[in-house]
Image 1 (cartoon, rainbow, N blue to C red):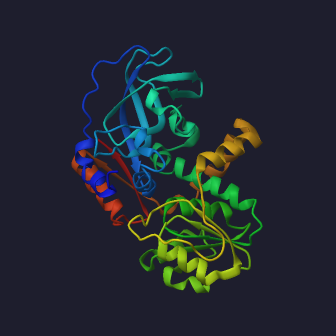
Image 2 (cartoon, rainbow, N blue to C red):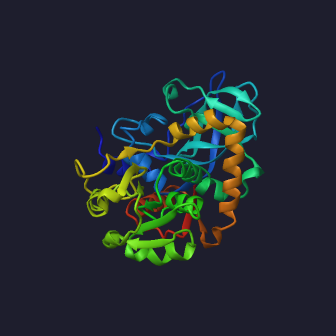
Length: 342
């Protein structure tokens, strides 16, 4: 198994993918126009092996291609129903181009039918037509999928018998979206580093914001912990200090990917949160149209509150590699959203 550090170190080489050569029948070539870099992409890298994220865009042995969300444009096509110039939102490699095998075409997009992606979660294999329904493309690249995760976290906690939701990595965009969605229904507490505390307070999404050394100040009698940081010490402290008041823990991310992990904990056993599973359950309950309607309505409400967000654009291999390194090392201002292109 290749280490994460080795894969991050290989970034400059793997962003410049070799030309795949002429496309075959049923294939289409896309230029990756622009994509977002967020803590979510770090989670993809951290869990590249155990959650199969490295399987989406295979790389030479010892290297890894980080998946990203953004927009691509068709530059060449031998796939029926796919035309040069069409643009799609979806899951791309951190690269300049990609060849896909479009199948299951409809007015709502297509699925990549490449053999190496068979068996992977459908939400990642689906490419959707670029749509003004979701508004600004930079915001879509940065937050559309993250907010979908936030929405699904909220779907989960809304159904739980808890009065308080505690989110670690409170300055992360996934946590901010989940806090926005839950506020007013349950008490929402954010845990963050001292340096990001004022930022989290100013967003207005949290009822209370605490630093990681203030966990003992969390109020509430029935608490759900949504762990986006993935920090073993923080998770241990939450379990130890909240005692019987902690009813459940859901592990969403690894923004603190570098932290040591711990074994068994007192209280509820932490449960992994896998967004595609929750999404499939909600689609089964509400139907595809009902799911989309609820999600887009919630998204529109969230976008109206994003006056705090500053979009920064980076272009070219060196600039993107630097932005990625800064993101991995936690040097990105939480108020900044990075849009990249190669």
